[in-house]
Length: 362
Image (cartoon, rainbow, N blue to C red; front, side, top):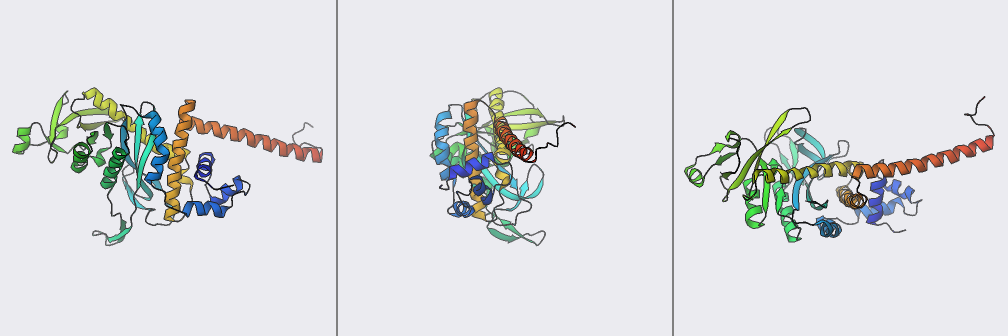
């Protein structure tokens, strides 16, 4: 039996425990040795170009005029794995502290017909610098996540991914990113900006340096604002939402597509939530967190395989009209039934040999 990516992807989708070379070898009744699995994971560097080859057929089947490109990053925590250029300390915005793990930025295509990752970038901290405050040595990436963001958008345009709007969170709402999307990529964006960002309400106010905080604007329809450094107007709206704890929050949304209404901006931006369920499914259903790999190349290739596993899962889910978690539950239930039958077979063998059942009535 030949060791192939498809086999490893299937293993990731079926496994409920750590995904090891020995585990896959055992699953194939040693038809594939654990050395072959290890060599497969370390033979070459899989890249975003390889992912696009796998994602392209699905993109072609789901592409739509209303497609959007969602850019976001996530951290797969690896607290017990030795630090290297890939497993490093990164600031987690959700926890508001540094965590150790793999930080990756994804480009997720979303249309009314489905979702598929069409690109990704790994944050590699290959440089070592001395922190000015603590005086301690720390790792740093020579490439910023803003550069990763722009590369992902550029690659999606180059690959003819069908989208009109780029969606991202406030972390990516820099002036450089906005100008890049609108002026160089000829696409539009919808992004939230932080409450302290300053805007002008007219070109004359902007020329005169009259800027106000965006959270001071009265909520009303059809407001155009100007950001310093951005040479085009932005449609502004605020969106009030409820947190899980019952508290409320406000998103200050801006869009380069000034033809959109407030309702359209808010409706389109809600699609960004798909990237959160994508990250959740990667970690829970595609075995992203289950690799004990020690070297950067094998760690990176396992992440690539997890992305491929997500695509496989999305294809099956779309065909069966089931979400990822329901599909995995169905697979686990079938596996549990097989395990129960095997256990009963073994139990019956012991009973037939001994002639007595421990569960038989007295």
